[in-house]
Amino acid sequence: MIAHPREILSEQVVQLFRSEAADAEKGGKLTEAQLQCIYTQHYLRIWIPQSLGGAEMPLPDAVALLEALCWADGSVGWVVNLGAGANLFAGYMQPDAAQYFFASEKAWAAGSGAITGKAMRRQHGNEVNGFWKYASGSAHATLFTFNAWLHDENDQPLKDEAGNPIYSAFAVPAAQVNIVPNWQVMGLKATSSHDFELHHVLVPPTHGFDLLHPSPFQDGPLYRFPFLTFAEITTSVMLLGMAYHFLDAFETLAKQKKPTGFDRVLGNIPLVERTWQETIAEFQRVRNQYYQTLQKIWQAHVDQQTLSAAQLSNMKHVAGELAITSLQAVEKLYPFCGMTAIYLDHPLNRIWRDIHVASQHQLVSPLYHLSESNASCA
Image (cartoon, rainbow, N blue to C red; front, side, top):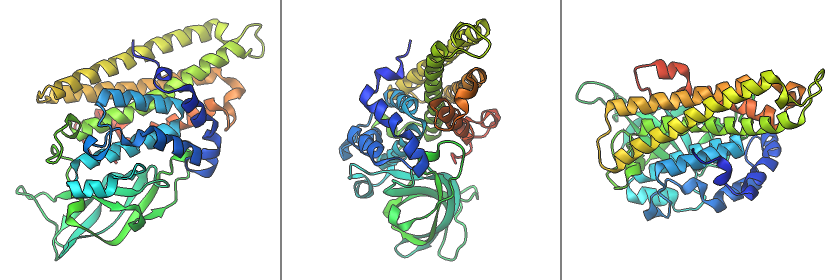
């Protein structure tokens, strides 16, 4: 049995994140207290190389931490997950660039994996223009990362040997980005997942990097692991953490709430009790399967084994099942919550809204897991 998230985070940390959640929602970004806790606990540095002062934490350990953060609060877990995941790029950058962007303890990368920009070759780098969506944590970011199609100095697309257009990932300081504040959604309100744009920004050659191949700058297993699979794993676990929070909150409600027309508490009504038992059993089964599969694929990778297409496909399938099961667990129990869960400031309502927004991410969509192509993470 995999440990409950409460065994990973201290009660003090959990209560801080949860007590600040309502204010964070109202402000559309994390509160100063939440931010200071994130910085103090070094959550954003879990995947930064040790050579840069990061933890370089093994993937299964870090994923369990991210589940716990999403269990503590959906918006906190989401922005830390996306920020720490983008901070992983430190291991793929040229050493001087990595030091420039990630030396600070508050280094925080926001951005997008979509290829919606254009980088035109200039004498001293690439002139970048473009518009990208959903940069979670943009209110707190110190740098932004993004993908852009490469063009020569005559604005002609660069192509590979097969004649396909090519792109690169880039990083720029946050001061060079124009944030478009349009994150007006029903859940994950505090994630500041705004759009952003760049206009005629000159990016030095050393600030480009490649995520499609193992890092030539770091030897650790984190920087050799297939990035798309990494993204599938870390996106699905966010729904898991939110669902676990909902299950815990529902269990508390079921012990206290006496629905109108019943002489017993919610949890003692046979239909509710049966649904609860079936839901929690399936939830735990899929959760255990996810962590077991993750541990196996990570160990194979650490042991220098070349991960097969079958292994990667199986991890993708298990991650997809985890996301769907997590959402379904919430859906099955929410109808029993009654009027308690309709108020915007109630935890059950906030979790319900957060997980429904999270479930629309491309990498946890049922359509993505039906697709035979591995599209880039948007």
